[in-house]
Amino acid sequence: EAGVAQSPRYKIIEKRQSVAFWCNPISGHATLYWYQQILGQGPKLLIQFQNNGVVDDSQLPKDRFSAERLKGVDSTLKIQPAKLEDSAVYLCASSSIKGQGVAKNIQYFGAGTRLSVL
Amino acid sequence: ELKVEQNPLFLSMQEGKNYTIYCNYSTTSDRLYWYRQDPGKSLESLFVLLSNGAVKQEGRLMASLDTKARLSTLHITAAVHDLSATYFCAVVRMEYGNKLVFGAGTILRVKS
Image 1 (cartoon, rainbow over the protein chains, first blue to last red):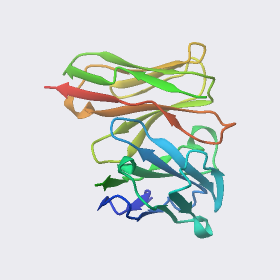
Image 2 (cartoon, chains in turn yellow, orange):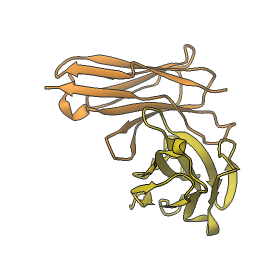
Image 3 (cartoon, chains in turn red, purple):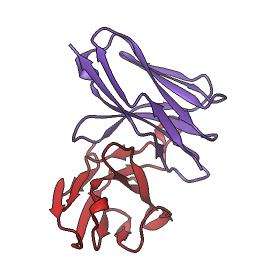
Image 4 (cartoon, chains in turn orange, cyan):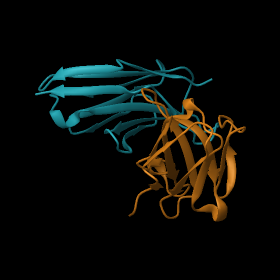
C-alpha cells in the first residue's frame, strides 16, 4: 500500500514570496491533515479535512495560509506572503474512518516538505 | 486546553542501558500515541494506548498508560544504536475530532 506522498521535499523562498505544497493521501482515506513542525517542537495541526470539507482550521493563520482539498483526494497548502517564522516542516497525514478498534483513526504521515524562508 | 509535556527532551545513553521517557497530559484523553521520527523522515506510529493500565511492547520498547495520573511512559530496555531517533507522544480527544496534540519530542541518542 502506497503511503502519503508530499512534494516538494524542500523549498527555499524569500520572505513575502508565495509557496504551495501538495499532498496525496493513502487511497481511501477520508480524513487529511496538515501539520506544521517548527524545529525542536512537536507537530501542530493547521487544518483537518474530512472528504472535501473542513473539520478544524482553528490554528490556521488565515490571513496568509490557505488550503483546499478538491474532490476529496489531493490537497494543497499555500502560504502567501511567507514570513520568516513560517520556516518549518509541513507534514501531511491521512486516516481512515473505516475499520474497528485501534486501526481506525490512526494517522499516517508523509515525509514532509521542509520550507526555509530567507 | 489539551497540553502535552515530555521529558526529558534530550537523552544520551549507552548501548545496553535502560531508560524511560515520560509523557504527561493536561486533560482527559481518548487515545495516546507514541511516534518515532528519524531525521528527514516521516513519523512512524509505534503504539496506540486506549485504556487505563494498557501496556504494549515491541522489541526493546514498552509503552504504558495511566489515565488517572494522565501519564504515559516509554521504556527502553537494553538500548541499541538503531533506536536513536526522536520520540513523540500525542493525545487525542475525540470530541475535538481526531486532532493530535503532540509533545515537544525526546531526542534519543544511543552511543555504542
